[in-house]
Amino acid sequence: MLTIPPGRLLLTAAQMRGAETAAIGAGTTAETLMARAATAAARAIQAFAPGRPTLVLCGPGNNGGDGFGVALRLAAAGVAVRVAGWTPSTGPASAFAARWSRPVERLSNTAPAPLIVDALFGTGLARPLADDVQAALDRLRGAGATVVALDLPSGIDADTGAALGDPLAADMTVAFGFAKRGHGLGAGRRASGRVVIADIGLAAPAGCTRQVAPPKLKEMDDDVHKYARGGVLVIAGEQAGAARLTALAALRAGAGAVTLVGGRGVPADAIMACDDDAAFALLGSPKVRAVALGPGMAEGERGRDWLRRLLAATTPLVIDAGGLALLAGLGDRSVTAPLVVTPHAGEFARLFGAPGIDRVAAVAAAARQLRAVVVAKGRETIIAAPDGRVAINTHATPWLATAGSGDVLTGIVTALLAQGLAPFDAAQGAVWLHGDAGLRGGAGLIADDIPALLPAVLSALGAAS
Ligand SMILES: NC(=O)C1=CN([C@@H]2O[C@H](COP(=O)(O)OP(=O)(O)OC[C@H]3O[C@@H](n4cnc5c(N)ncnc54)[C@H](O)[C@@H]3O)[C@@H](O)[C@H]2O)[C@@H](O)CC1
Ligand SMILES: Nc1ncnc2c1ncn2[C@@H]1O[C@H](COP(=O)(O)OP(=O)(O)O)[C@@H](O)[C@H]1O
Ligand SMILES: [K+]
View (cartoon, rainbow, N blue to C red):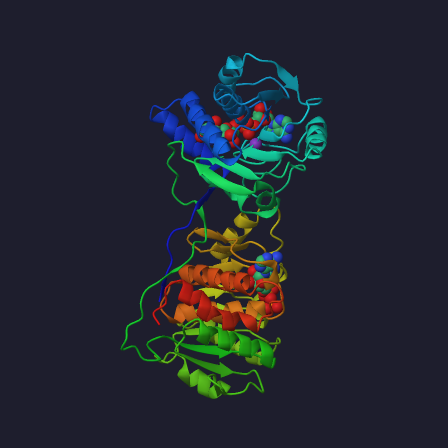
């Protein structure tokens, strides 16, 4: 049995401003927060690349203020530091800039150094990088310096990870207070390098997005029986491969018994086969604790019947693949069953419309609208619950982008639901296990390998032998 511990928080720029305002309201000044940020960053830099001649690029806002603070601390520690600025500092940053008594070089013609500290823009980046800033970054990029970004690589949108320019790729990013969503998404994920969190005494507001954490395994009761471990029913179409992958994955992920309807030609092995009528009869019995609908399924009246029936039932349900196409065509999407849907990008757009630049917001809205847990699969898988909770999984590999990989994920989610996990926890646990199996398989991975890798994944989490 898995339990899902809370993972690392990922804040938006607005949530960071809220945390800052609350701290300032409680008596901490903006200058104190900036000093804490600079001290923590200077320490992290000294540990990462000790004593290296350094160029600090300082922007006009508080990110630049952090940069001046870092420059002052590195210089005090005896490091050869130069500062280049773009436009004069404003707000609390100007106090830190004023303490820097050495020259401030012009960003447009400053020479590189072995270590570059990027303190141009952080959470306040509001528009694409200006041409002269971009030109300076492009010139400095060519020098091959080690890059440390303060809070975010300059040019990355804090909320979406979108590139508002072409940032210097950081070897390390020192994030102040909390990681931001942009560190884990899109271009921001690539540009951030290793993300180190510097505690500056801020409290996070409620309801922040989290990164999916590795699940924890609780020991299995030694007198358990197969149906107590969770029976799964898989309602598949005619494609035997997809059906078999889902059913096998459910078994490997700990379902005690898996019954498969459809998937013509699937060999019996450990999978129990039955027909639609027998499966209807099983619904609601203790032999079926969760149902998967859709692997290998084409659109048609049989699938629509199943969909209507399952949505109006109370057994936890996972809908994927062909089941999602049927759901997209359904006029009334009211749901009573605890529901998890697992669309890839194309299926998501068909069901809910194109997500636009803010995928997290789009997936959260979809979950609210459908009153279901939505698992939006991809390089970063975004998992949203109807109550507003959102988690992001990056523990995966592009080798998982292989035919049938999604069918395997469906089986794992269904098995975890059958074991009694709540839909949001089952979805997170399954996505992490699937990602970990992919990482273990590595190069050459095909979907058939993923169920076979699950025993090693579960053992590493401490499954009882
Ligand atoms: N939130 C907090 O509690 C703390 C934040 N701190 C720092 O403050 C940063 C946020 O500071 P700010 O809100 O001042 O924002 P930034 O310093 O990230 O950038 C804002 C400044 O850049 C300008 N600007 C934005 N986009 C631009 C663009 N594309 N081209 C040119 N100019 C642009 C704005 O007009 C403003 O002057 C954080 O990333 C972090 O580094 C730290 O000092 C510690 C505490
Ligand atoms: N670039 C990527 N990096 C990591 N994981 C990926 C990437 N692309 C796809 N995946 C994962 O691979 C799986 C593919 O699922 P899906 O598209 O439904 O495949 P299929 O329909 O062939 O079964 C999902 O779990 C998805 O998150
Ligand atoms: K920065």
